[in-house]
Image 1 (tube, rainbow, N blue to C red):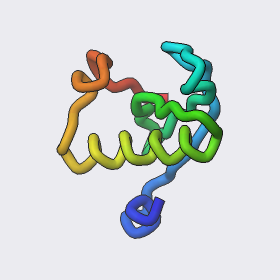
Image 2: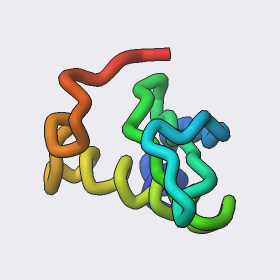
Image 3: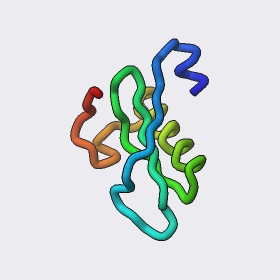
Length: 78
């Protein structure tokens, strides 16, 4: 979130259905930065899911990971 604020990027979080449901991961959030939807973050509660979604988007933006690392073939704009 701080990175988005410093770079003046529009960031939006939304709850989405969990792709691979388990007893531990019950919530999922998806982060959209500048119209690009990043892979979902999952967690045991809403706060953990939102944090994981932000970490995933941040690591892809910085180039540490790619969409392929998360099983996503390509990004898509919303």
